[in-house]
Image (cartoon, one colour):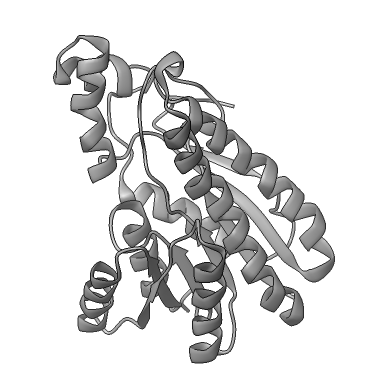
Amino acid sequence: MQRLQDQVAIVTGAASGIGRGIAHLMAREGARIAIADLALPAAEATVADFAAEGLMAMPVAIDVSDEAAVEAGVAAVLAAWGRIDILVSNAGIQIVHPLHEFPLAEWRKMLAIHLDGAFLATRACLKPMYAAGRGSIVYIGSVHSKEASVLKAPYVTAKHGLVGLSKVVAKEGAAHGVRANVVCPGFVRTPLVEKQIPEQAKALGITEEQVIRDVMLKETVDGEFTTFEDVAEAVLFFAAAGSNAMTGQSLIVSHGWCME
């Protein structure tokens, strides 16, 4: 029996990277997936790839920082499939600077995508979830939901904020059968992380190999990157939980970088 048989899930930032990995596993477990992404052509290509495997998905163009776009995207999923059982709030970007040089516009952009985006997607999905008396929201946080690193002030701030948001949603959603949890990955070798390697090397005055070994993976127990599959399995654990006991929690998936 597939763990998400006939459920409907929205995954933001699902056309590539971690989001695509999550969406793929959930689709293989029987869910119908809304591939919600700013890049509609990439979302459409992802849907085509899923269809070739016999998996059910639909593309949805969503800028998670735009209130009207989020509301319209969620409405489109409801119009197509009539329900929303799961939201995976994954969309994000990365910008790195020393804090004393961080432009305010880039700080605001980071928080708009990571925090405003999570809030807007949550608010839009809670309405049909409350009406149905069930739902699961999984936020993709980070080890930086628990720890800090240099050059990443808004990212760390936002990822800490997701833990707080999930706890409020867990408390408010409990009366409506809605759970909320956070998955906190370590470094996953996505295009976003690949872009950071030379940026951090330049900012820190070290080689790219040193960034990987001495910055990104230094605190892991085995010097390994977290994989898409690692993160997707953790999301599935929360999304497919069989009771409402698992709510307001955060699960770190980081090869031991952060242990709590």
